[in-house]
Image 1: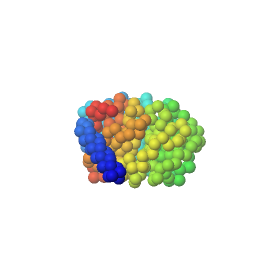
Image 2 (image 1 turned 90 degrees about the horizontal axis):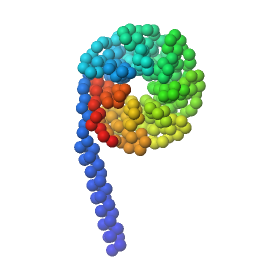
Image 3 (image 1 turned 30 degrees about the horizontal axis):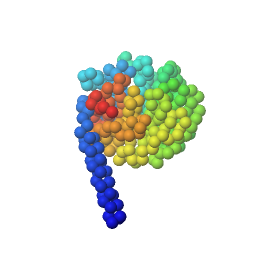
Length: 333
């Protein structure tokens, strides 16, 4: 009799759990889907998307070797830059809005005048693809991450190479400054995230925990947290940006490789984009999934937020080479 009672209780618990899971799934399915506008023009995967600091212009870099300049309000293509001779992986704007940097598989970095979008100078030194570029908060230094396993620091005013670090043992995929400008973080195919002194380039800490190569990393707007995504297995890790300790490891955040991660400007969301065709919005404090954009036409290769956080942009790859500008006003946490 005792065992029958236990079996009945267990059966009831299974039903309750199943009903709760069904209600959660229904709630997620009933969540309003954000609307989007589509920009077309690239003939290769869109590897980078960035807004100008005033939010009026969007630029995109592609495997078609071009950089395209778009009017955000109208969606019109304003100009196409063809100076690079290979894939354009990295794009960044100076904080004062006067310069843009682009990094390419042709191993060069080009600095641009954003008023004319004419080249200022070309920076040479990398011996393999330049995957990402980032301006320091004071705009005096440009950091670059390369497939030649190096982190490099350049003088923006002169174009001189100031620092080369080669502690990574495989391709360096991502580089980003902390908001205070004193620290840099890089992510690499060697499965590590590394923290550096942004002024001297001296290594400060090596963060381990990823099970495959690290594709991308970002720093929270308050500088207190890091967010990184893994190739092949869809793992994301949240780190304490000051101590380097793992705050949360989500081994199967997405089904396939995570190609990009990004914090929203207000720090409310940490977003991961994957080859599985989904973009997931995480609560970086509670580490729970808040929203998901599903059914994308291609794999998410790049993403960015407008400076005011109202527009979320994704660039696709694979068989689709479009860009989507999402209106996130329907998301309520």
